[in-house]
Length: 284
Image 1 (cartoon, rainbow, N blue to C red):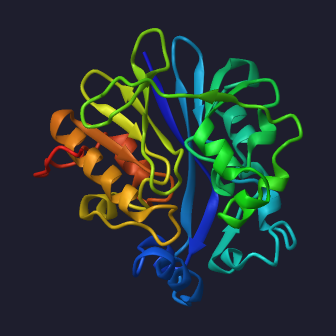
Image 2 (cartoon, helix red, strand yellow):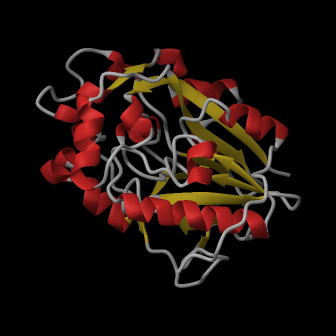
């Protein structure tokens, strides 16, 4: 029997053009940074899957240090477009302990991608196997990574040497690749690029429905259903294609869609609220 926990590690506010992009290409990013209209504080979710083969943690959320002045590089224009609030007790480590999950219980930490609000809690997992796609780590690392929006990659732990994933050329519904994570075959990874090139989603098969842990594939379920890319993604066309694939998948399997910053994520998980069937074509 599996159990899935949504773990809120503080909140983040972003510009409205960050949540729902305005314009195309580079203009979209410029509009995001210039926008002075802000969202309400949004949750920063990570997840823990209690599985018979060992606990699977999906993303780490943010760390409390991110709330302090000087944590993010002042030279980067992107830091003007988000604000974070995280208390020490909201970090993922203490929250897992309160759930009765010790570090030794965690078999894998799966990183959907490596932006700061997903990788800020890496320091809680020094002895665990951390899974990241090779594409994601290459795109996120070094100065080029910081310029691409991974503004806190200098805070990754010195010991951070993740296991690099290559998804298999095994289609899963509309997704062209997949990788079965568990021996039971009930937890599978699929590509969900767009927000970042190497982003992956985690499909948890609960028999009656699939719980789709989709990282930052969109900022809300509604934006995914409407095919609206965010304002900071690496590739808005790829993001819209990912949305289409998710919609197609939801017509094939009852699906609960959970993303990191949707205020309704916790309720949708608790109530197993399904994506309503939508007309969609199979993505190429």
